[in-house]
Image (cartoon, rainbow, N blue to C red; front, side, top):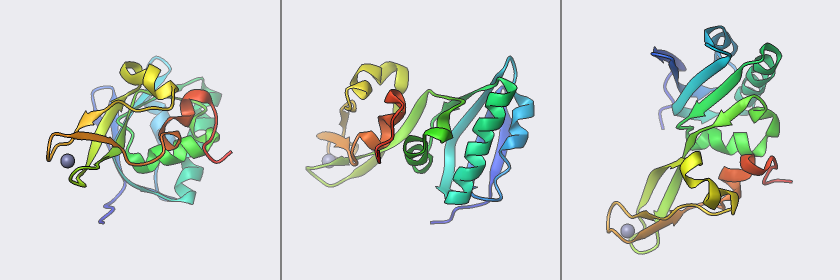
Length: 162
Ligand SMILES: [Zn+2]
C-alpha cells in the first residue's frame, strides 16, 4: 500500500492529518492552531504509524497537556486507533469522537470499514461490544473483525496488552 507523504490541511477549525505518522510527522506545530484550548484533528487519512511516529504522537499529547489544550480526535484511522488503545500515553490529552474499524461478513467474507461514533455507541462500546452493521456486499450482518479491546480500551483507561 502506498503510504503517501505526511500531509496536514486546514478546513475551518479542523485539521486533516494524513499519510504516514513516523519520525517525519510534524505534529507538535499543530498546537499553535488550537482555538479556545481545543485542537480538532480529522485522522481519517492516516495510512501508517510506526514506533517513532507513536513517540511523536506521545510528545504531542504531552505538549498539549502542558499547554492546557484538549485534542479532539475525529474519524481516527484504524492503524492509529490500535496505537492509541495500546499506549495510554498516546491519549492523555485527547478526546476520541469517532474512529474507523474493519468489519467482516461471515456469509460472504466481505470486509468493510465502519465509522463508529463514540457518543452514539458508547453504551455498547463500554460493554466491549460494537454495533452491528449490514454487509455492504450481501446485506447480511457484518461484525468487528478484531477483538473489541483493540478499539475501545481507551474508554476504560486500560490497555488490551495489560
Ligand atoms: Zn456479506
